[in-house]
Length: 194
Ligand SMILES: Cc1cc2nc3c(=O)[nH]c(=O)nc-3n(C[C@H](O)[C@H](O)[C@H](O)COP(=O)(O)O)c2cc1C
Image 1 (cartoon, rainbow, N blue to C red):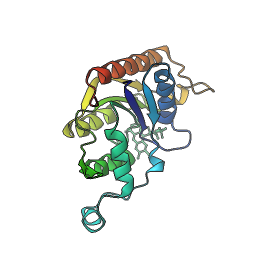
Image 2: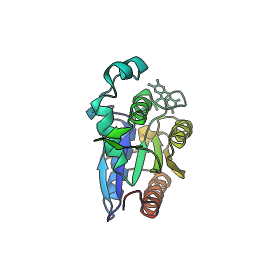
Image 3: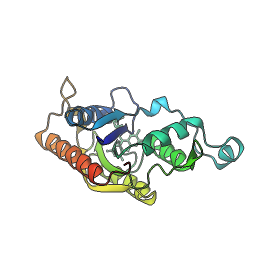
Image 4: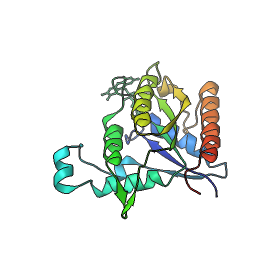
């Protein structure tokens, strides 16, 4: 069976550099035999996590749908900005809610356990979002994901894409190609599904 990779941008902003980078990754992965899909967190609106909300109303359906979708993948590519050197709240909140999903259709589910995850980030700054990726790494490792050491950063992202959304910098392009290739190889070798 062909491996499935889900691409998850950590920003829903119109004109987002990370969404552009996610599109580049999608284009590269679409040239392989993998089954590629992309999730837009705007399609899964969630309240800020609150234990009382969970106690009173349970885990929201959008979190269950998101968790189910993630759980069905062999690999996940998160392409996210850093906010104040850490995980943007939109992404962290989605991960937090998804981590509260224990069962889908009466079957136990741990969406991140054993999931191969690649990380990428674009930022207008010179760090390229690398500090945020370290923070995401900690979160996902705590949830049992197999987070790849290799990552891709695109610093100075305001100049990083041409009018067609293609990466302008050879180093960044090679880095993304290599990350996608390794993510797919690792997902194939560690596949969680038959
Ligand atoms: C609250 C906040 C904090 C930010 N902190 C950082 C930061 O620590 N490092 C950085 O490189 N950029 C930081 N930025 C700038 C973002 O990288 C920039 O807004 C970027 O365009 C967001 O990603 P996007 O284009 O994919 O939406 C921050 C932006 C906001 C709104």
